[in-house]
Image 1 (spheres, helix red, strand yellow):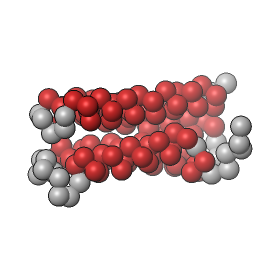
Image 2 (image 1 turned 90 degrees about the horizontal axis):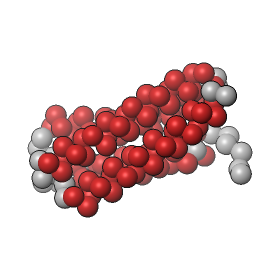
Image 3 (image 1 turned 60 degrees about the horizontal axis):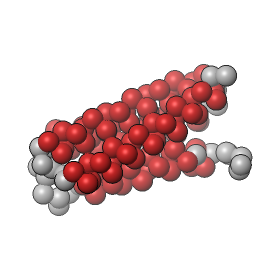
Length: 121
């Protein structure tokens, strides 16, 4: 296993970054459903929150603080997952896209949970 020297080395941060790109691809400027500004803004903020809270927690240099920020990131991953149910129900995305985004959010949540468990030992 490689030593983690910066938050960019964390697989969960890398995966969160990829999810943000997907969210912006799904609801960014020029997409058909980007006119629901409140929905788009909430979903984009939740996605960004995952990666930014992982980064901010890592930079705090305290396992306790890092775990606290990971809790917030995990909550944001749940929010993204929930919003993709709404996006599917509102026909903003098709079922396949919604399933893929929810699966990505679940994988990130599991990774965050594993890291939290390690930090809280």
